[in-house]
Amino acid sequence: MTGHDWPLWEVFVRAKGGLAHRHVGSVHAPDEEMALHHARDTYTRRMEGVSLWVVKSNDIVASDPDEAGQTFEPARDKVYRHPTFYEIPDEVKHI
Amino acid sequence: MSSPPIIDKKDVAAAKARDGKDEGAFDAPVTRERDQASVDYLLELGDDALILGQRLGEWCGHAPSVEVDLSLANMGLDLIGQATNWLGAAAECLDGKDADALAFHRDVLDFKNCLMVEQPNGDFAQTMARQFLFSTWQHMLLERLTGSSDQQVREIAAKSVKEVAYHRELASDWVIRLGDGTEESARRMADGLDWNWRFIPELFEVTKEREELIERGIAADPREFEDDYRAALANILAEAQLEAPADQRPILGGRRGHHSEHLGHLLAVMQFLPRTYPDAKW
Image (cartoon, rainbow over all chains, first blue to last red; front, side, top):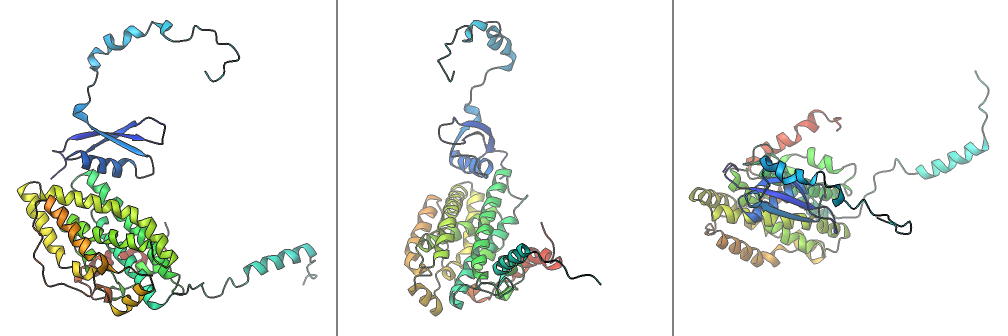
């Protein structure tokens, strides 16, 4: 048993209630239960979290870096998509 | 030589107040009222945790994977933290001692840990078999000690029981995975259980002095949960597709200082530094 034949799992930690789970890293583990144990032992030793997610790295569908151009660049010159053209009345706070 | 010092009245008042506060600072250390049987119990609880913590620490850098390395180190550190609390409580009753003195300046015959925790790590399966057998017992014991009539015992147990619940779950999961794994992992787990099985009866031994401590509500009676313990083992072993090892001649004596040769070697490593460099500081 070396750990090298164990699948890789991505680990997400919720730091406190109300916040979203954030990706913190990955662990190797033989199955989902052990993946949670390993995630707990590796990433929440210093009280970093209140909730843990693990998901098999293989199950994550990622965008293709070679297609970054067509995926992301079209948005670059469309500043009108940012809500910056509205006048906000002074009375409205917290925006 | 020189004129008498000019004494300011304010200084005198301040000195008086200060001296008043310091009164008794050099008296003998505060000694809590505990009898020998209670102190022995704290030493047993502390030594179990300390020795197993040290054993788990031996895996540091040698575990099958970095994740398992961290799991074992975490468990070891939990246990050493628990030992600090138990031995600290015992030390309060022993003049001039602290938890470090008890951990590093006692010899083999003075240690009261059960024999199971001093057993060598063997392979990963043997380590996990030992952890499974011990953590299951320790968890059941601590659950009961959260209701001890001794407040300090209650508080330390309440803090430790959550850590040990996790140790028990993790070790059980490994027993299941190795037992219900490959032919080799099942054989290794069966061997690991076989090695440690004969040390189970010691966990349920109750001496006359202990009987009295149980009656006073300070100690928990392990005999009350022996059936639950055996059932818990049977459940996990069934899930792991493993047969329980045949009962062997039980080996007792750790609580009275009769240890296997393994403990001396463990202590030599653990105690070397503080004994060689008594003034060493972090």
